[in-house]
Image (tube, rainbow, N blue to C red):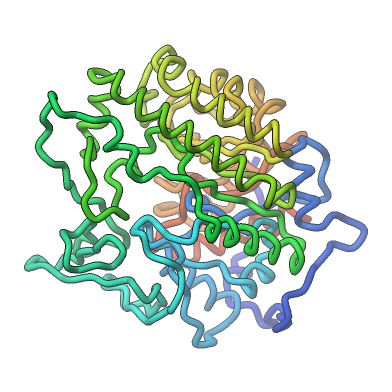
Length: 451
């Protein structure tokens, strides 16, 4: 189905959305609050309008430069500097004023330290090297520049240790650096790959509690919690860019090889990680309680463009047992719905993921093999909430026309939104170099679908 598009709506609005300095709870008249709307979607119940997320998770966000341009298009040039709240991917904060303007339904609560071990505090200015966008970064964000003009990042911002990541010249985000030590098979110790896992401190539990309480008491937004340390084999975490001197198997290629040739080693890593994860669930769940609606548990990618990384049997043998133990514990102690992020072609693994206890699937990469949205909705729509799939971020959003973006968004909303169980988001993060007019076309399509 083709949908009508109004080019005039791509212009900066004449009337800016009203914004109160005091955070307000906004409830749709004769409808649902954002929190109620998200809960209804998660329960596969009818909702009054489309439930929308941009920026609640590290996989559902937007590059800081794109946030800056979108904010100016929607709210005008106010001099506001966007905070980079996820440094690894350089994702920008969707602040309360923008949340209200876009009528978003979900907010995110994340660990106190990011992927580089840096706390989100003591903000300072930083200029994005590609396009000169002025943003804010945490105070411990420290970098150097090499002879090629690439930026180098350091764990915990400590420039006295080797760098852990690089932002290549012309890039908008960081790539982890290989810090793999020479592997001596006779001395490999699975505990070296467990060094980053530990019982949550009381201070960290209090941090999560305070964040959740604030959103719960001061907004009507649905609350999405990122639970640290529960993703088994997430390749983004394997290099441990937050650690100054990581030991064990830290090279990406070596890790993937190890899941096949060092299966016992990886299994022992997962056993220890699971043991610690269960204790952390038992520590945090009674404090946060059911003020949270959905919890991010796993970001492990099991798919690539043409098929899954691993066979269904390998998933059942190595990953599923641990994921099920973790998910069962969450279900035992809370009413949280459990969110898995896995890119690529994972159709063959979805039945086992459901059996493992996952209830929300993201990013729903419809361009990958076997990931036809009609088929996914027909076969799994009554068991899974699809969180994403709203537009192709590999082709349509970066390279399509506004009309193409608009129509794809409307078509995906019609398809995934039928009979509920859908939170609108793009397929993974919206990158910093996406044309602003295409982002505005996405927003217009969402707003028109809400009508």
